[in-house]
Length: 251
Image (cartoon, rainbow, N blue to C red; front, top):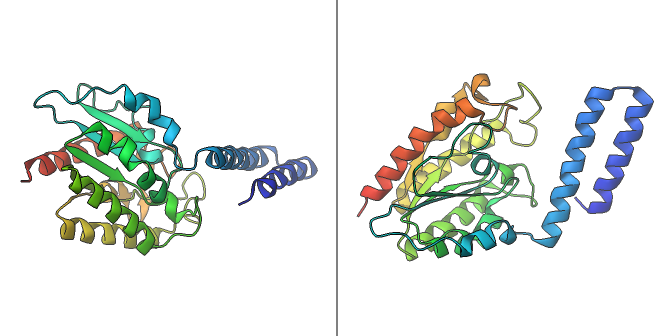
């Protein structure tokens, strides 16, 4: 969506609030649109988010002998891991390289900087949810798969073992998430990721099954129907550890 269109929508939403006096609901709509403006403005300046970790990456020393360094590359689900009490693998040589609202083409552009240059033994790739939401334009299961394939091939060329994570579930318990991320498409994409993981010799990390109830994100494991809460991350952590162990055991 063009910047001018989003700004116009914010103005229209604000005027509608005043006209209808639906303050709580309108406030939420305006905040959402303001987030869209902020994200669109940032994409214009730095589409792939290279500045997010660029300076930090240059300060990361080479791995110590015997260090099993792991990079988690992803979107909101990864970046928010470590906030609000959900500690990000304390004491482990794991690096969080998640950026909220990112899609797999953006992750692919920064893969060299945020993964390869850090020389990990394993990369955990978690993406696709924001592609389905259309944050950087139309996306299909095939285009998402192509980006995951390119990242996997880059990793393996550089001697990095790959863990491919499922897309996490969504629900409408708190806010309407399924309109942007249809549950059927999430299920189909996860099946595709699982197949490709087997074909490419990667490890499939199934967050989805542990977080889902029917097709909905378990209500006690999410704060908004999209992102895991502290309890959700506690469920995910041992699954990630097991997948990393499997990857490290590969020859």
